[in-house]
Length: 306
Figure 1 (cartoon, rainbow, N blue to C red):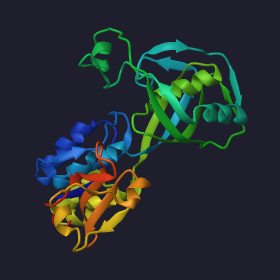
Figure 2: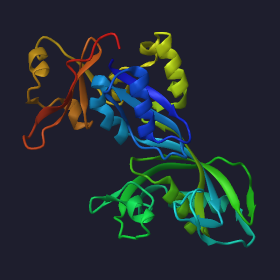
Figure 3: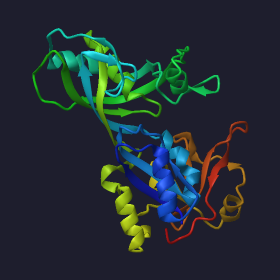
C-alpha cells in the first residue's frame, strides 16, 4: 500500500492519534502525517503511506492555508481560546474596516515570530509546552516566517464591542503560528488578542475537497475501495517540472547517479524524472559540484496500481 491519503482531521484528536488509528484501519505500519495540527484545530492533514512517506517532508514544507477567527480584547497563556487569561481589556472598541486591513497589510510578507510557550518547539532538548506545564519560562528563539496573503473574510464596515471578532484567511509558509499571528494582529490594533478558532483548509496542493474523515476511510477500507481514495506521489510533486526518462538516461537515473545539471534546475529547486508519467527520482543541484545534480529522493519500489 503506497500513496497519499488526504485526511480531514477532526477536532479533539492529535495528529499522532490519526496516525495510530490509520495504522489499525489500513493494517500497515508505514504511516506518517505531514505537519502537526493542535487537537482543537480541524482541517487538511495529508497522510503518507508506504513508500510515499519518502515525500512527507515535501508536503510538510509546502505552504498552508487557514481560516481563523481573531478575538480582540483578551490574551491567554496558550494564545488561543483554551488558555487562561493573561490580560483583558473590557473597554468598548471600535475598528473601521480600513483599520483592520491596515493591520493585516503590515503583517503580510516576511515577519518575525516568537513561538508560544505552549508549543512543540524544542529548547535545550525539551519541548516548550513541557516547560510551560512545569510553570517555567525559558528564552524562546525568534524565527522568520512568510505570510503570503491575509484576507479579511467579514464584510462589515465597522467592528465594535467590548470583544471584537473577525474572520481571516491566511496563506503562509511552514512554521507559522496562527495563534501568535492573532496576538500580533491585536498588537497592531493596540489591544490584547487571541485566536478563537482555526481550520486548515489547504496543505500544499491538498484541499478539503480531497479529504476523507477517519470514518470514511474505514468505510472505504471495508468496501475494498481504499485504493480509489489514495493519491499517487506525483500529486504532491506537481509543482515541479516532470521530465520523461528516455533510453539515454534510463540506467543512470534508476541507479541514482550524479548527472550534468538539467537547464530546468536553474529555474526550479527540484525536477522530477518520470517513467510513463510515474515519478522515479527527484533531482536537485549538487551542493559541492558545479553544474551537476544529484538525486534527493528515489521511488523505485512504488507499485503502478496506486
